[in-house]
Image (cartoon, rainbow, N blue to C red):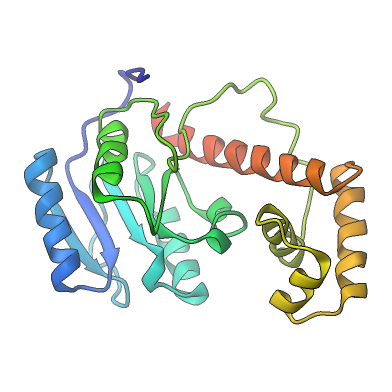
Length: 226
């Protein structure tokens, strides 16, 4: 099901921020031909030389980034036009919580194992200003009735990391090994997380996390769509 939003302007340009390669150049050409939108590559390790045009869609290849580069590009894109739309490509499980909440006007996230056809369909929906129910794509529009309930909760980056591990079904032992901390430290973090979120168990914490991620994405995306 798709719903058209007439308030969105058609994109003048699409930029893929990645490491230039034969594969990325081929993908850029494919998008240009299929969507009839100019697509250019931006080297992820090079500075942006000019301001992005209004209505630009940015595809950020997070698989070739690191924490420092991602932070730099988050800051750069924050200073760009308000009519910017950001799509994350090649996301892995560890990228889908704390990092994603930092992006301005985020309107789509695609996994590293999504097919090219699936990604194209999702990008088409975003280009056309439609609500996409495609799996793997975070919807840019949702019901706002409960949008304020997450704003007063402050979690540390470590607590986000632990929540992300919980979303993968990790045990306390698994979390301790993944984050190089003791099980006692994991239990302390979980106690603090449950207290902050006002939940009683891991299942409720994961439910809160999933809802919070959708809500944060919606609120950042709507700045570009309203």
